[in-house]
Image (cartoon, rainbow, N blue to C red; front, side, top):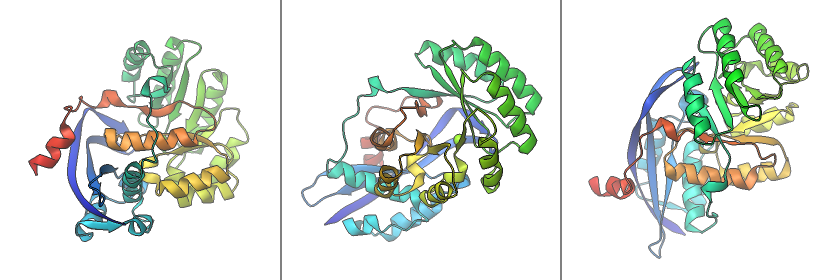
Length: 319
Ligand SMILES: [Mg+2]
């Protein structure tokens, strides 16, 4: 089966920049792809790369789209090379939606983790999200100095309802000693701290494995498992903690599914600030693969202005 293919660039400015250990991120750019089958059925997919995380760049993705010259076969979709993981996700999920392999999601029933800004702004934002019904929150650390962040952490914990959960994400920005410090503090609040995410950079796997056996607080790998190959490697090297999966950049959804069905691992799914196209596809996958029922890391809507209802139609007609 050959599909007609075309694509458009789309970007959204964040209401407030996303500040992490990587720096300040202001604009989310992506490529929306469209497949049309021989009966004229249409489906969309989204390429939302995160190159500092190990995916292809927008340029890589664009040149892939351009060289297709307006068509791609079903085999071609499953043969997209591994160095284009965000493209693998976009094309496979568009294909799944054409083949009606996606379930309809009832968003009402999903439990999302709300993303807080770094620093002390987290305290106010947490109250706002709490009022919207969130009970799980994620706070970025490793941005300011450790002592300051620990003080803010204690304030944040003190205002959380006792049933709420807090995830800390360092984006690899801690060192061995500050990781130990954070883990020992988290152990004191084990009721509320769900896990510490990626304390050390991806090349420090051995250290994270060691620490995961010493403290009660769970460690989650994120940057270490940005692609499916890395995920498999960490699993084989004995990682039994939590795996954070960003479906939009991890690579082929069908191969991810296969791996997760054969190896029931503790998964947390997480957004890369997709539009509703990528979001739906990612949530579909998440719902299919979640074993442990952890909150979905897709509580990021408050980072964007609401898009116009017919944004997709406009995007195609404009160009
Ligand atoms: Mg993370």
